[in-house]
Image (cartoon, rainbow, N blue to C red; front, side, top):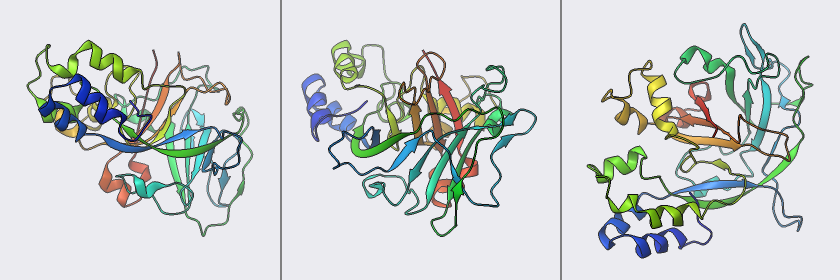
Length: 284
């Protein structure tokens, strides 16, 4: 859920919620970087791209899911070009972040990468290539058709948690069905903030179905039943690293208008342990 002006979400909360609840809810808002296509004015610096070919070090093997095959290259981000000082997560100051995913090109979508089956997490990968490491564009392996290259710019945008997000539950529990955050007019006003494709770094994920933090938490805990009391606290340990929406310009369609999500624990992000990032995806 996103804002269009600096004070849009706080104003929306004041309009639809009791004062005390509005203030507490506003305190949960988090900054993100919305990744958009350049407007063509030349004033929007390019910070990354969807698709194309990845620039990899000579000794870096193309990511492969053992037993299934090579992953597809989803996109890359220039960490030095990102306005990441505005975020509340510790992105690298330089180098590049590269995202790969086993998208079904080799098996017609038979294998699914899913946090509930931790062994499938090898089907999604994040690489950080330091700025001082020489790289060259790498041709895609046989059977992998690269996605069309689409440049991306970034702008700071505030995000809000949905009423079912674990931070909302922590702040407001217990939450009966008639809680003000479940008010239909408030929810409709929040939905009005969605506009177009949402590629994003940091902030709250935009779930297509349930909260993605719960999915990742269940996987991290070995897939216990949903009522397991450990899931809520574990979900609070994960933050969004990146999400990539379906995108017609890049010929990317994740199921039925779905979204790819990479989440990570802040301590792992600070230590640049991108191998510990978790992946999930949702579609309608």
